[in-house]
Image 1 (tube, one colour):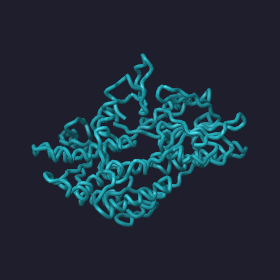
Image 2 (cartoon, helix red, strand yellow; image 1 turned 135 degrees about the vertical axis):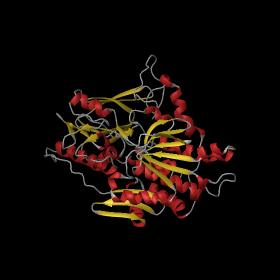
Image 3 (cartoon, one colour; image 1 turned 90 degrees about the vertical axis):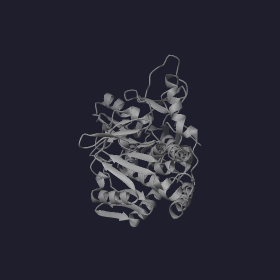
Image 4 (tube, helix red, strand yellow; image 1 turned 180 degrees about the vertical axis):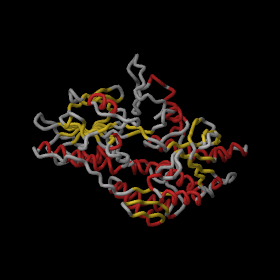
Length: 465
């Protein structure tokens, strides 16, 4: 892409993250008299709400993860840099990133931090070894391999108990991601695969949706109850008030509300509960004095800046402000707000004193032709909500080509029985575990590469992504 020329007279804007907040901030600044450096640990922008469709074979990863360079290749004032940000120095006004042992330092005059959030296992990070989350393309591809692979192994098995274990799928977390994931696994088993095997009946697969809460989709109120009913209608077992206490290769252990523990034998476990903000939030909190909550979210001022640092803007899932939800629209609107504040400051105009989030509603699909949607006081369920879900998600997929191919794949999956992305490899399933087995000889960054000799520090503090 064309990176543009950096000049000594133009203000330098560094954006951390290529998610919704970072990307929309960069696009908002396309005509501003600034030089932008966008630093991200992946080369793509991820449309995270559709990850579960990659995991269940509806969409390819390219349709929801276009290359960041391609998206921004017409912005002459923008440079895209691959690297995981490991340090932000507020006093020196620098951002340090690393990739494959290469370290780069990026000075800034204005900074937008939109590093997002990862999966939280609530202090039980070892669960990740057997219950992958749903936060990255790597996660989705691993789950695709595990889900489709479970049916293949069940076809080979002769022990009825082992077949039952292989055909039991447990989704932890009854929020939108968990509901959508469970619904698609059920549809996959009952519609797509039910004629494809000779020795097993895929439609007999057991899909369990677990949550420690007492309701499906708690923020949706009565719509959550309708979603619960629909999930039961398509054969999903919803188990509420069930807290996960252990996860291993053979299954999962849950504690019910009465304190009794029980074990569910299941080969495939999927973690869709809880998020943890980027560790950069704590780093910024230590330097600025801003409070950081248990989930790693940093308390920002009403204009999304840090105390004493009007040049530092934090947006998206990293922030704690007025109980804002961790959804794409908060990041999009926050990124644009921060970009507008930078443009105003550089022009000598007053900046908006407060960020106002415009809630455009919440929605979740349950199954083919069925969804729930809440837009202001309007509450919809069923086919109309599903159509609204399609239109909204299609509108925010980046790129005309991605929209066209997504529509085609949706037609194949929703109007027919097929799924265009059913390829699953051993690399998808075991790649993450194999890399982790290499341990300290590899850097903590997902981008990989050997550590410096003698460096034995695990920067992520986690066993699994």
